Image (tube, rainbow, N blue to C red; front, side):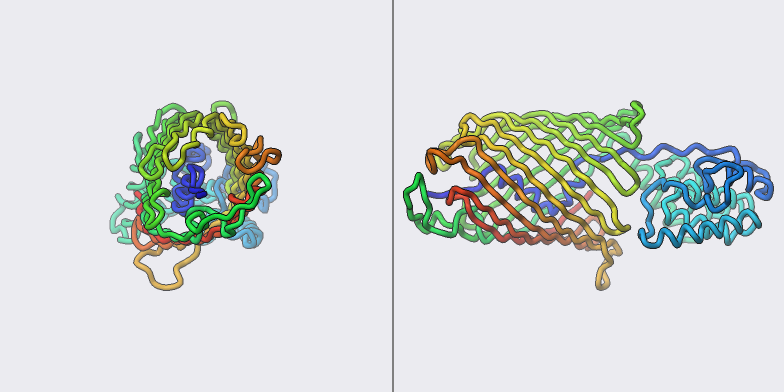
Length: 508
């Protein structure tokens, strides 16, 4: 008796060998921020000597965001516009320094060194509007300074105000004697703006590599199993066996800007293929296409939120034989709580049609409806550390009651960016990831092959570590190692598996 991997194993394998990177290309979570409104004070041609109190203290969304009789110290307590780049532990020190600098700016508006330091600290704290207001007032005293226009362009770019950013970048290039480093940086940002403003965009990632598993066929190590109260001995071919496979995985996304309040149409295609050295019956092909509109919900006064509604079409082959065809619909709601935190709610429905083959003559018992819901929470703890937690529920209503199952998954993990420990061709940071999880499955009815009275129950735990090393623009090496431990009250489905993979990835 032999157990081989099914479509769920194939899908999980595909996700694992993407190294988590492909998931980030699934869909955008929220649209770019609106261009901030410019207050009249920020653009006043008057000297800042008289404008400082009237504008800096009173103007909403700038450094003060307070009433005219507020203390200058309140200038540094504005809610960030984007995630701070400074570490949380340094924010209090930055706030104190900004308060002191703000008081000095009020006392001496023409002190450009103080103003520039205040703007730099505001940018680190995520208060981009305060930084912008300060730098724009500095232009009164230093008009046409390329470095100043570059910094303003970068700040507006970070806010998503691309047209304003482009104006400042072009102004920097138009100045005489522009330093080469400034010119190169401006041109890179202008190219990025042109790409971001395209109506049609296409991006993706392709990963190719090798994977080793200690138990590729997900079979037990103990040859003694019990079926309906009777002990049986499995032959060696039915026990867990190691194997190596080569794989190619891809995730591709097309986006079309509908030019309607931030709405867009998106299509995502995920593909995966694996060929095994020994277990040909596990050779896998997988593809899934999702297509649908993404709506910006600000029109309903739900700020920094989007809703995607999409159709789903997918298929799986095993050993070159059609195994699964599926189709359905889904939705994805994303809400940005603050610059560091977001919540993602996903719901999907599929009808799954399994095909019987010589190796898998009872696969069609799984035919039926499948429902999935997931709630994810993501938070940026540090400038280089992101954590996440996901709770997922999955329900399959199959034709055969013993194949109908309710599954609950809990996953907690994080990703850390850090500098390369030695010289590399690129300065891009390395990324290390760690995830741990638990899965519980309850089947509706006993499987008559195993028991006439007790339905199957499965407890599964896993841990996975990943490392991504950039080697040049768009290219990286991805490595992963994982351990999965599965316990079932049906002996045949109790096993563990160690997996390692190494691949090369290309993003575009």
